[in-house]
Image 1 (cartoon, helix red, strand yellow):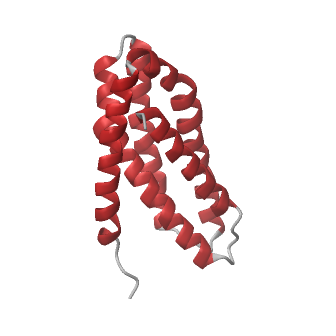
Image 2 (cartoon, one colour; image 1 turned 30 degrees about the vertical axis):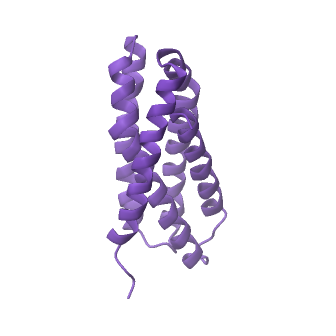
Length: 160
């Protein structure tokens, strides 16, 4: 699978999870907590494969200042989402503030994934890389993703 297809599939998975979370209410604390945990894991893995493999390769190959700027913007969008995510994690799942903060996070993720990456960045990346290069990058990203899936759940605190 090429790198862009892998990222697009991640975007769809994250979008689906966010939609499910958005349907929860203050009374659905357990469901909200479970879905948010899955979302955080997906986002963490996604960010790491982009920041460790995808963005550096794109920045190195960038043929325009605009593509370099899009990569820099993407790093900053990750940082912003991480800040909001940390705030959400410190907000009770049953509070109204939780839902409001989640909505802000969701809007930022959607902007990042669908407008920036799929809308502006991905077409430029397709032109900058050969098909086999995107396939090779996708294979490296998939491998890192699997390694991170094995490591991440073990790092989460257990609710004992």
